[in-house]
Length: 362
Image (tube, rainbow, N blue to C red; front, side):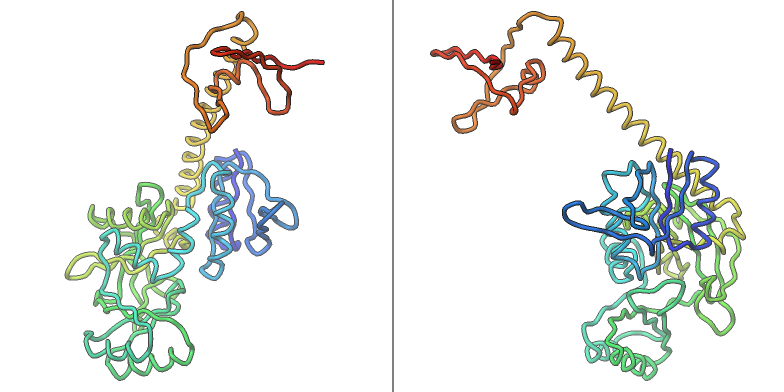
């Protein structure tokens, strides 16, 4: 079977590709920046100027900055590639924090209180009703980037003024005190294959490993495991990193990443890349096997019809007829046995209650 990973060539992608060589017959790494999507007649996906090859499994991943391209690629591949772990819609939803929170809200997944405001002036009115400190986020961004903290109304108002100048949309969220720590769970299929407790550096509230946080292995409770699995499912992703805060009022999801970095978590779970590669292979093999069986069954059915048409004499079939206006639609079995085609001409003998059709031959 053939496997391709379309990405920006990150270390995490290389780790998965390397492990995939133990399972797939062919493994190819495809640089996202060298892909072109063409729509319309003769459209498709092109890589380095050539039409993208056919694969049994394609793992598409990348930064939020390429969300539209990622969705375009996944949309064109859906239905053609037997298995992809991420749906096309997941690239739009999961790469936008606001859309992510909305998706989780619809599924009843617990989150910190989150507010969205249309203007800076209306957001400032909101500041009078929230408890401090608060978190302010840009809808797009990963690895702790675009996340700001305000411990008072005056500092929050100053941040809002700056955001207004940038003409950037923003999200306001309650701050949950956890001592600067959170839990990162890596979901693969219907399992959490790795979990890590991350603790922020002193004077920094961001626990992300990329932001300098320190990680240690942790065993998740059943509740946290279910929340992580439900989050990935809500986003249409079978490979997903889910960040959870353990707050006094229970676990709360603060973020999800459908292109999770593996370098940090691999220090506590060294098999993480192999777990992902093995899952991709097993899922692909399952789907390819099912498709092969269905295609074989269909082919055998057609062969039997061909045998009927060759070996048996004139047959009589009792059936009703469907009419479309002044036209008669023949049953599918009739057209298969007779091999009638709209590219040929036919001679009709007719009288009341009788219709005989024969292929016209000169």
